[in-house]
Amino acid sequence: MIAVLKQGTDEKRTEGLIAWFKGLGLDVHVSKGKYNTVLGLVGDTQKVDIELLEGLDIIESVKRISEPYKSANRKFHPMDSVIEITPDVKIGGGNFQIMAGPCSVESEAQIVDIAKRVKAAGATILRGGAFKPRTSPYAFQGLREEGVKLLETAKRETGLPIVTEIMSAGHLQYFENVDIIQVGARNMQNFDLLKELGKTDKPILLKRGLSATVKELLMSAEYIMAGGNNDVILCERGIRTYETVTRNTLDISAVPVLREQTHLPVIVDPSHAVGIARFVKPMALAAAAAGADGLMIEVHNDPPHALSDGAQSLTPEQFADTAAAVRRILSERDES
Image (spheres, rainbow, N blue to C red):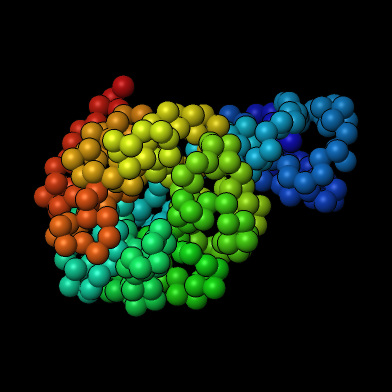
């Protein structure tokens, strides 16, 4: 349920109303817009007498939210959420960021070199896999906690915040200095993991599952937010269809759909979506034009010899060209 307060409502009366809602056992999320304040109520809202509430002179309107996701719902929070990664790096609400780096961290020299080169080309966040979920048990599984330490080294060398994937709540101890915790497509509905991440105070990048609907993605975000962590970034990374020309099918339509349905930032990972390096740039441009809040792009300094996903990785030079083209799209988007 949401209660919209009338413009100019006294702060003391607002606080009194919030206290009353909390007295009913409800959680209250406050969203202050330019003209109105919206109170989002989570819990057993059947206890709320709507007629009584609508009769208050400070209430503009009261609505029940029919969708099963509440906290992630734009009706609940009309303004775009802005997720602060660092004081200088924010995602959402007009803040566009590019995350770039290798699929897998392979060595200190590799990750530091790539970090320096993607930063020079315009990346603002360093991505890199330490714990790697692989389809084959014989494939490279990542350097694990050592990989996280190498990402931290690259962070110290470049100043770039880092994002890397978690596979188990038992690994949280290794993520203390990680700026964004990524939940991969295979773990989008690992609800026990999502519940634990809801207890953390770190931004969570939640990737859409290979066969997940938009609604299922939002319900997974709701698990994290229900635990108290509202800093969730959604990532469209392609879904599995009957098409085999590309690795997956990038659902560009998910970007405007999600932006309509949720206040959470939406980014796109074209690398995993298409799986072929030469298609990454056009899909990155399409994502930017569609209104995405950011991109996640795989970059490797020697793609033919990458330990994982070399076929979809851009070289630093290709990434620089892509980032420059994306900036031109963003400039046109801002002017329109």
